Image 1 (tube, rainbow, N blue to C red):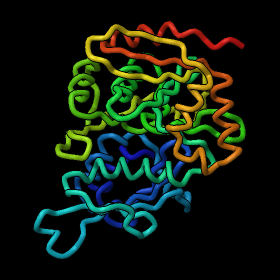
Image 2 (cartoon, one colour):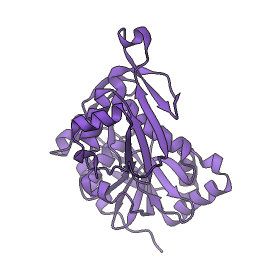
Image 3 (cartoon, helix red, strand yellow):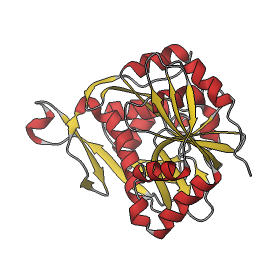
Image 4 (tube, rainbow, N blue to C red):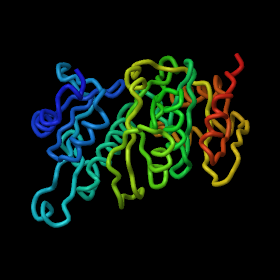
Length: 304
């Protein structure tokens, strides 16, 4: 059973009542919210995702609600609750759907310590995965969106999850978060891409989410082996340039982008070392998406 089998009215009823048990990759999240924008976003972007309401268990229990009192009428807001407690400061009600996406990222990055979790996009082709760690504004999500609509599988736009017991990357394919000018860039570059309604005036500017490709959702339980660590950076007018990075430098940059590297201690060190040891590492600058895709198409498998 998937979200699309419910229909919009039933979806809204369940969200406003007992909740929706949504599976995204390895995780099941119980979601409750009476807010139409949350239901509309889930109906649009999560239509192909399975429901697990018969499981009797959820990894995360979340709710997006409207604070009471005068706030319901004067500058209405939305709160994100985790296990019944408000997790963050409320945001304007118009930002309810982005808050849902951001809150799910927070649940995984702050709680799922059975994995080494890195702030990075992850894409895969022919069983080999490229990890793309980068700070905001680097063009990471724009590049990821272009790749996964041109032959690469989406494992995640935001969270690389390395399984500690075997060093495999576990998928978490959810909508790709795009900001400001990137929304139009990908809208023009990917005919037929499905986007949530753009939300303005967030702390990140204007934000919209692109629906994950159906094949990536269908293969959400299929892990991949790390093969490349690529640090992307958008530079206006620059030719695509891929340069080898030293393993020590790549290790330190990857550690700086990891959410729980320190918390995991020796396990975190060994997991990060396994990524670097079996992957080729590069810095990558680009401006034109066609050139970027051509560069990725020519990536050679790491030497044995």
